[in-house]
Image (cartoon, rainbow, N blue to C red; front, side, top):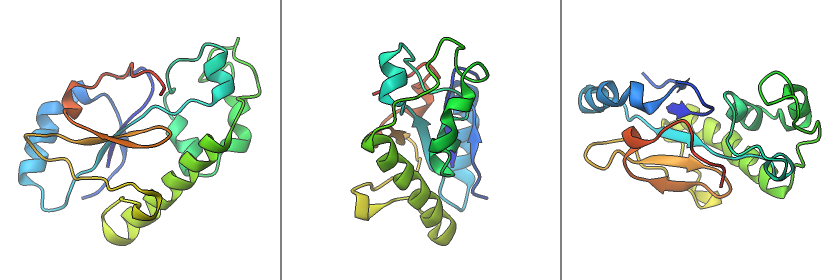
Length: 156
């Protein structure tokens, strides 16, 4: 899997900007025997969104993947601006995205396919010419043209 979060530039998970990997990803998808799955993470808790945090920060997807929602407030001043409230204002949407991310990782590890059909998410492999990726927010959406994505994707 190839993931993009924040504002910086065999199956694996690497968070970096698609503009820096577009050509390489196209070459890899043409030559790789295993499927490649690309995503961008756009989920921001409502409380932080209402406080002005417009973008998911680098590494925020890990909090959702690895059951780190209860400790998200510790990122204030480190990964998110120091003016951000300590309470992110988590809602059921955040817990839904977290459950999806956990199931996605398990499915990817078990089958090589991160789709979570029981939650309504069928994630197509990255292939040219469509270059589809998953925009992971509440609810995940399949989008085209991953290599045109920037790391400044607003939260949905």
